[in-house]
Image 1 (cartoon, rainbow, N blue to C red):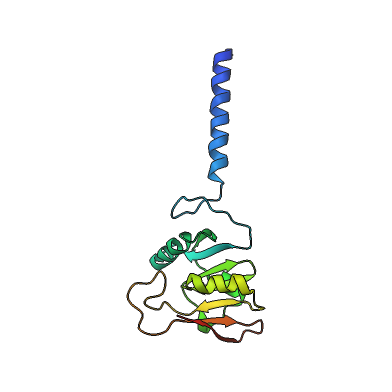
Image 2 (cartoon, rainbow, N blue to C red; image 1 turned 90 degrees about the vertical axis):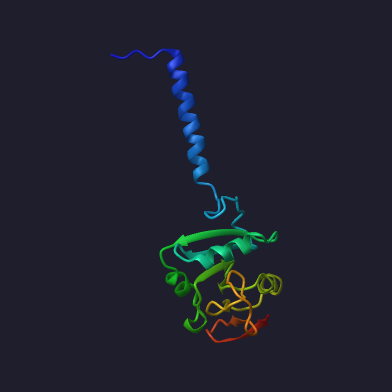
Amino acid sequence: MIKINNITKLSMLIIILALGIFLAGCGSNKNKETGNAVAVGGENDLVIHRSNSCGCCTVYAGYMLKQDDLGVEVMEMSEVDSVKKDYGVPSALQSCHTSILGNYFIEGHVPVEAIRKLMTEKPDIKGIALPGMPSGAPGMTGGKSGDLVVYAVKKDGSYEPYMTF
């Protein structure tokens, strides 16, 4: 039989407590790309669902993390089609990542100004979208070759221009 003295018991207790504190920290809400803590759960919290293999999504997430008025969480996924389907993103407006802000979806490389307008006006729509991966949009390289049109997607699935950059 092995006898354990009080010093060994104390050492084991300290190790167990330290491990518990470490494991509790691993479950915290931290951004995978930056390690920055994020506040998620409020009306100004943006959850970006992105493919774990997309580089421009990483750049877009970095752009959004610089915004002081948003809590941002990045969810890396093997595919984001299920999120697009769940929120009713029209196939003609799809891009490489889908963000969720409250009950709204934000599809693609939407500039923060359009997101702020959405947060302020709170229109009765499903969400907003900047289709494709246009050059010059936040997170995309190159200069703009024309206007960037962000569309509002209505509850019936139809859409119309919401904001132009």
